[in-house]
Amino acid sequence: MKSNPISKSYLYTANDNAPDIEIADLRRLTQLIKEKYNYDFKDYAMSSFKRRIKRVIDLYKFKTVDKLITVLDTTPDFFEEFVSEITVNVTEMFRDPTFWRVLKDQILPNVLMNHDSISIWHAGCSSGEEVYSMAIVLKEMGVLDKAKLVATDIDSAIIDKAKRATFPIKNMELNSKNYGRFHDDATRTLDGYFREANGEAILNPDLTKNISFRRHDLVQGGIFSKFDLVLCRNVMIYFNQTLQNNVLNKLHDSLFKYGYLIIGSKESLIWCEIANKFIVVNNEEKVYKKIKD
Ligand SMILES: C[S@@+](CC[C@H](N)C(=O)[O-])C[C@H]1O[C@@H](n2cnc3c(N)ncnc32)[C@H](O)[C@@H]1O
Picture: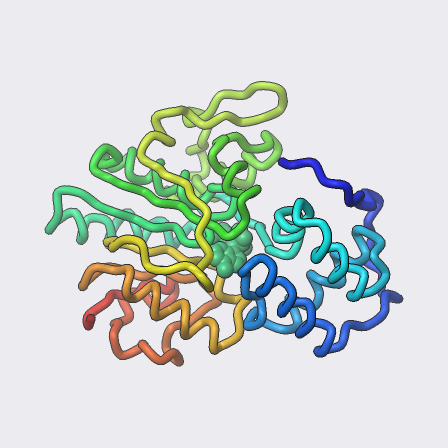
């Protein structure tokens, strides 16, 4: 990570007494960011975006939104760190284990029945746990060599972290537990998929070789390829409806006809503009199939 002159208060605790942030403040902030850095946060869901901004103001002891705006305007090196702080990167391997079972038993066999290869896009991949879970499933099915996996995120620092394929060893307990639930066998663990060094779990290199990581912004970025599967899980929950519609259009255009779109377990496609271009494959696991261009 680049060094920058802005120091963080590492003894951060949420400060309920921090001044409230007005909508006009957020508007000035998002406008400056758009003009100076060409990132567009204006249609992020207001309440969570406001919470994250408040957190940054507390964390760096800026006191006011104006101070944050000035720092962003005058210190370009700080911007990358700012993006990392306002995005929510929470993730885990085999998150929602029952989804991974549906993927292994139904979706992947269906795609591979008609194709020799498979292309998968993980949009909003965070630190990579989701794409590495996919690599493990494909490896266990004996089809990893036929797969092309692309994993993207708006946050460059988290992409760098994902590329390292190295996770805190303490996280592997939950990751392994999810994996056991995915296999419906609590005795199965991820132990064979990583080695331990200096308190970290380093994934086996064969899991990483078919994955390409890159920075991509779902809001400002275009469509860059077509895929058999697109996973965009727990990303659009941070967007308002206008932006969800905009992004869902891009995800639709990034899929081959009869390709699959998978969103987060608490999200839905039913209400959106392009709902009629998909059919529901599995409502619990939020798996949809594109049926119209
Ligand atoms: C909560 S994580 C989800 C990670 C993973 N998909 C999962 O479900 O566990 C949300 C990710 O979306 C990314 N994100 C937010 N806005 C984005 C945008 N405009 N374009 C691409 N990624 C974005 C964040 O940086 C974050 O890493």
